[in-house]
Length: 337
Image (cartoon, rainbow, N blue to C red; front, side, top):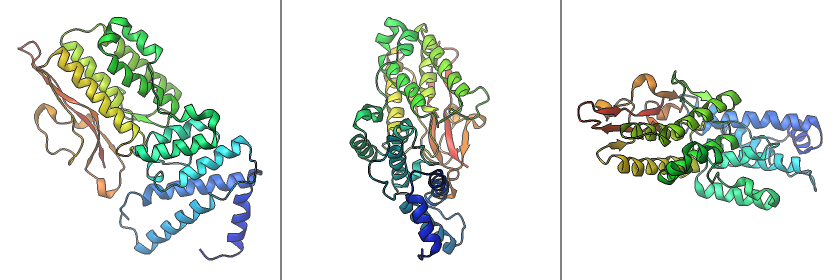
């Protein structure tokens, strides 16, 4: 961008971290930068004129550079968080996984976004944040450890049998408390709801703990049903944009399926399970494994991924049941629309 009066004025305004005017300008430009990122980093101009596309890239790059202007010496902690949030939001490795500017007043949001990044990038940013704020280093670590409410819902005997299930359920419940900017389609109408809504978050938490309790008392075929449902509870929480390959969220899904396979094999080795994670939506699977159309979720993923399966919400399974009435459940998926 050519230098001029507007350029100089923006430089002065954005460098001022003590006034409401400077803060308002940074907030507006950060929102603009992240909105542009949603379109630019799909990797497909979507029919836009090439010159307009390149201009948008230049604007996005310049906004990112301006938002990284150094803060005055000795900033308050709140200003330090804001500077770190702006730096994180402007990182090209982060932008595709962050649909809106980070709130510099809430360190938990920073920690939540790290769960969406490739493992190496997340660790780099955890190190950066820990160096800047050593007193809260633990707050940047991924969720870990058994929750009391999960252990209580299972009881000691069932906890011994299903400890790996309890671990992934604890992690997903801790994650929604850390970063409520997540979605889930677990409601009876199969529509996605935003877990930033405290009521929806509480409904999800209560339903999952109830299912954990059902697993504790289950036997036979019902054990399989509740194990699959709890795996679905983990898989059916997702950020938008979707997390990167190798991220904490992707690894959580892998751990959940590993736990499902082990527990189901112990309950009934005849049961077959699988995930539908890629390919064209509505193709490649048949019979009971095929996703039930009315229960799948379409999300905006750009023209390049339209019609593609993006995320598996629920594993399919096939069970011989009692030998007369087979028990089958189809998969559920997210797909690009």
